[in-house]
Length: 295
Length: 295
Image 1 (tube, rainbow over the protein chains, first blue to last red):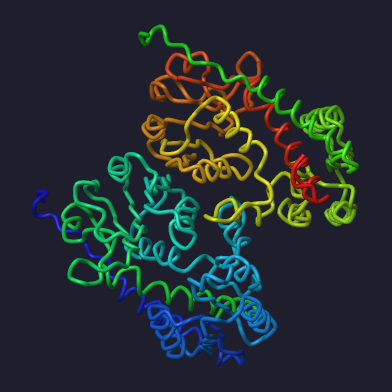
Image 2 (cartoon, helix red, strand yellow):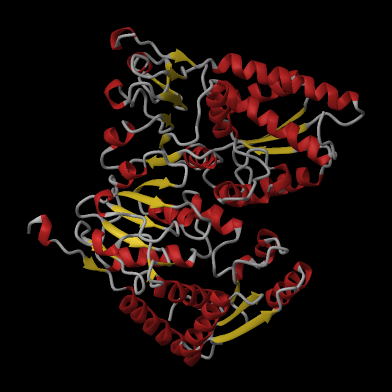
């Protein structure tokens, strides 16, 4: 096939996530049929950011469809840090809650680190507690939970038949939520990982080394065709709006699809995986906390 | 200067560490003169590994010279994990101990992770508690202590006038003790970091991208002249013996000095920095635990 004709395979995150959700639903049914509790998750949301509310609503809808007990704890924007911490502690104590998720970002008067550190590590289904991140980073240590979006990226690679071991993986962005943990997950699977960021001097050349490229910087259509190695697999975590106010990723999909071998679209790529992985983590927690090893 | 004539500047870790020790000694004197306790450190050593005993002896000698209270807790190789944990807990409770160091490796019947997790995080002067590693990895979080050898590598770069920000840094090796934390420290200082390991497919090409190369794989003279970019700064953490039973690093010093701009020797490079950084961490802990902000 000549270069002109190459069109990358689109990695269909929507379908992959739907299949994962079906599996979770079946597992929840088995768990309940065996006489155990359904998994319970609480989402704590402070303030009235529209995007957060939409996201939390979607989480609840999906969780309920999967048979989870899903509680939304919606708090006004002027809730004090102490009150949020007290609520976290209350859910730490509730045996029927397996996962506690504090929706980020929090209002600026609340210290994110202080609040997240309060979450019982056995209920930290987002995987953002420093102990979980520390274990994720260290060789021979296993975190209780892997962060959801990064875990979703790895799942997309695996389900698309991509070998990770020995590959050059380049991660664009080093956020605590995506860039950093996805780099660690790739390293744990024996990729040679390079982490790029705003201070990277020769970004284009570094990206050109990637067999696997994960873009998570939050700049619309930032990655162009001539940056990407022919045959690379591209995972686009970006969620931006383009000049026509349409949702788009960090990668210029219509350009890059001509050089990549596989690529995730936005929407319909990584996006649907996050909630699926969150529910998977919560199911794992519910099984663990009820002493169920397998279903 | 032509390529033939280039000889890298040797980074003199011995002198740099000696200067740091002088500074620590002065600070300890000031601390004591202000009516506070001298820093207290305990090293727990299980078994009779000769290299560990030599290392612990050196630590004690240096710590005592610096005016520290230094306790060695030498335990027989058949000490149970429970007994080691009890001893750790005892020193956790002792207010006059600012740093607890468990010498690794532990005998195989003792779980390293379980024991290290017992160390009070405010006394974890080695910086290996998962919370410290997690905070080291995360953006905007500050660990209580940075691991000693990695911190020593950064100190050597800084004191040699090397700019880290924006440089391509390649770390050879991903151990919990050196490779991984040094990669994080380099990333925190805005280098573009690539971590290589035994599964890296095209090691030579990756190493050739490095402006800063940190070698920590434990293979004698592994890195050769033609791997290294002209002008690169090379930090050699290796401690191996060569064919003549002489101490040597992971880098073929006599070859690589002809292409690097600066290079650490073995011995006399990174080695002397580790104990210096350990004592610095213990001094920081002693100040923090006695409410002393500066001297």
